[in-house]
Length: 287
Image (cartoon, rainbow, N blue to C red; front, side, top):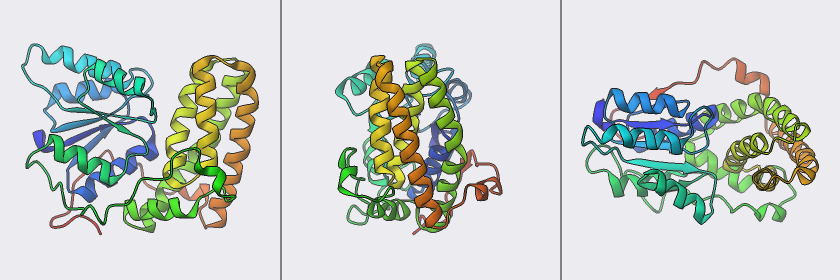
């Protein structure tokens, strides 16, 4: 596909699946890689129409990957459009993305309408942008902090909006199952980070869990993750221990709520390996 293709750099498996499904629905061919080093290598290997770059990745984060790409472009004259994807919503997060050399910024959870707006801004005739009408595009999920308005660990309105975002139940089930499969490891990592007073590990894990939880409606869990991420960033080890336990309680409540909706962690093991590319079907995108 070459220069018509979208490159997605995202270390979280569930988020990679989601981004590839969104590209399919919008009518863009896409490829996904799992870290910044793979993104740098991919862009060096061939041109891409646009790169969706997660900022928070191990090994080489999105900022470092963007700087490496920009450094290589100094000798080629090429300029790859790079759009940040981050769960950070502060003005300094946006400033850091632009300072690293990124062209634009999307705040997670990224919705179809957000992607369409960015593609319409930066791309011209390379895909099927505009196929999702503005009035039909799902609205953004509730802002974090709104979780107190519901006693359900999974906000049904947000979950239904997520199902609409991905085109129905089959993919929603796969996304949730991957989330459940990864959850225990993330919770164990948070506990280890609290025991070791490792603020960076706490920040990174809470950051990743926050955006995935918010996307599918686990708003209370996402709120606790947001608080833990801030504590990790500030090095507040005293607050981190209790926050980790709050995250664990909300995660178990979200797991139980998902089980009650028919989702099971063991089901995810039966799914094939996550795809790393997607090709839109001929004709219109998925309904």
